[in-house]
Image (cartoon, rainbow, N blue to C red; front, side, top):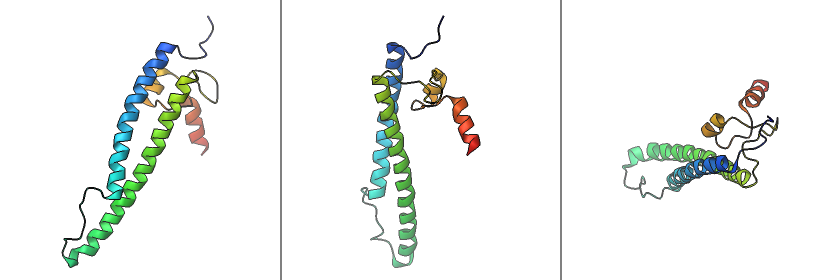
Length: 128
């Protein structure tokens, strides 16, 4: 029996549903982070006494910077999930880009946007 070179359409559909669910949650999280950065919730330091206003503005700025960084990471995650959906449509999803072999289903369920088998990923991390 020869080794499988790609996942079946049924398996790809299962992964697509998983990715779509993760994408929906990721988009909600991104919107929440983005609204935090833009301060659309209406909370501001305008009504705070002058003594604490400087401290609150500094903390608010730091909080916005952290939220901005988290939003950037979330956007990157969303883009990786969207790229995984493209690979599903092209029927190349789940194929390790280094070895050409199938990435185990367990890894894809844990990291649905993975493009490398865990062995290859671990070897890359050891080199860095």
